[in-house]
Amino acid sequence: MENIGTYFSRQRELVAMELEEERQAYRRSLERRMGTFGNTIHEPAFRYPVSLGTSGRNALNQLTVDLRFEVLEDEAELDFEPGHPVTLFYLNDSGTREVPHQCHVERVGDGWMTLSVPSQVAIQSLRALADRHLLGMQLGVDNTSFRVMSESLAAAEQREEERFVRLRDVLLGRAQPAFRQLPRLSYPWLNSSQQAAIQKAVECQEVCIIHGPPGTGKTTTLVEAIIETLQRETQVLVCAPSNAAVDWISEQLMRRSIHVLRVGNPLRMSDEMLDCSYERRYSAHPDYHELWNIRKALREGSKGEQAHRMRNRQTELEIKINADLFEQARVVSCTLIGSAYRIMGRRRFSTLFIDEAAQALEPACWAAILRADRVVMGGDHQQLPPTVKSLEAAKGGLARTLMEKVVALHPRCVSLLTTQYRMNEDIMAFPSRWFYHGRLQSAPEAAHRQVSPLDTPLTWIDTSEYSEDSENSDHSEKRTHTGSLTNAQEARLLIHVLRDYIDMLSPQKIESERIDFGIITPYRGQARLIRRLLKMQHYFRRLRRHITVGTVDGFQGQERDVILISLVRDNAEGHIGFLRDLRRMNVAMTRARMKLIIVGNAQTLNRHRFYRELADHFRQLGDFIELQPDSPQSA
Image 1: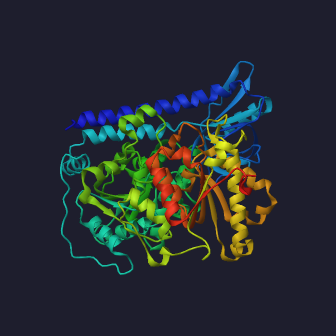
Image 2 (image 1 turned 60 degrees about the horizontal axis):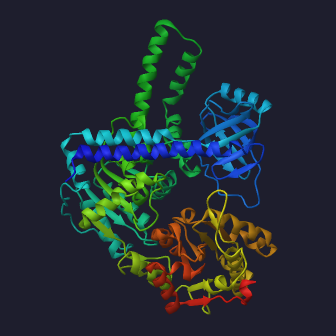
Image 3 (image 1 turned 180 degrees about the vertical axis):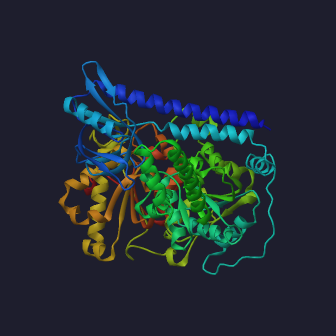
């Protein structure tokens, strides 16, 4: 068995690899574009030029400045999200120069962005530069996350408290988990697998997993497990890898009248969560007015003994307010990285809940685990994994999550939720068989749901024959300048299929019954192309609010009545790229409630067993349409 020191040292090496890849990618990105300045550049993590707008202050009294930029008709999905670091730069005679002020995204809109800036001097500097040069912006590297992960791994290796050592040994497979026996819990409004998961969550002494396949009510179950735990403990820590996931589960807890203290950068929180944010509750504390007056007096130059007394009182109030906020909370929620924030102090929690644990890097998990005696993880390791940009780090094990390791090491710690409430049973059947050992079953209210009784839940439009016979160069896949892939003919075909399907249902039915559509593709370039084609057709204008186009990653956690998937890959060699990551197809297919339409070249894909069997599933339970060169749909 691997030595503890060796294990954590290796994890730190993987984190360092990933950070270096982030830095190298940033440098490569900037260097690649240096020769193109003078032209407008639109990319997900890059904009040039941008213009400065008005400046002001946000709700937390932080300085902000607005940026404006051109938006193309086929605009890419932006990688800029609230809280992300941004580097501004300009071009002069000696080359590209970065603006030496750290900015962060506050809000993003259609052709505009608001940045938080560190000082009035920074705003003045930006305005002076904008008067002489064109400015650009690029997504920066978040060094803080990597530092927290590295420090947390070192602390996890060195900590010697008996309770933590026991938890660490179980998580790493050096000891077996233990369970206590409690009276059988009853939740009549939940199904049997959900009830069993909650029972195991409160009985585990070190770790348990709530494995929630698509549509099985994983968040509902996790919320009930948290509430049940709060019957036995005064406070729990709830974490997730992303701010969106933290906000979502926090909102569900608040709806159950649980007092939540949301810790983290308010710029990254949803509007609904700001009222329970640490900052907002801090400023609403009864003692804050006195603290504010002391700070104001000190800023204005109080000196001598009076200033000394005021600083002592300031420290006393800060400690008191901080302690009050945490003592009043039943749930403290934050991202995994946010659990290392200074305001958390030395707080420990009997139980840590990690939502979306299958998307969390293991080093980030240790930051939160350091504060806990036991861990309950919720997620699905058969859906999207965490993003790892360094191929070397991914191969070294960074892409394998702690949840995956625990599932493999301790099967008895895993509770699989088996009843799904989203999909028609024909849509569900193949993912259930391939990913979940055939254990999923449809709830009665979902099993036979259809958009139309005249329709089947499954349709595959196979472009293989058309591809072989066609001389149309637009038909095969092509790589864009950003490295993504497109397939123009397949995109046009998908739009034609969508229009035919809408005509079959009637636009009136779609609007009156609020039927929604999702168009999913693995490739960002194809998503941009499909959006542009939709905008070009007047037919879809009245239905735009019913149609969403995005990548697989963008659809994680979402669902639609009708899902159309454009697979893009079309080549004689059978190369399918990251379609080999079958978890992506699991996510894409399981977004559909009532109808799943796949458009793609089955011949390119059928060298892989998964896609051969998937095509057979469509032939047996749905429609498998082999598109011919003279088909109207290929026109």
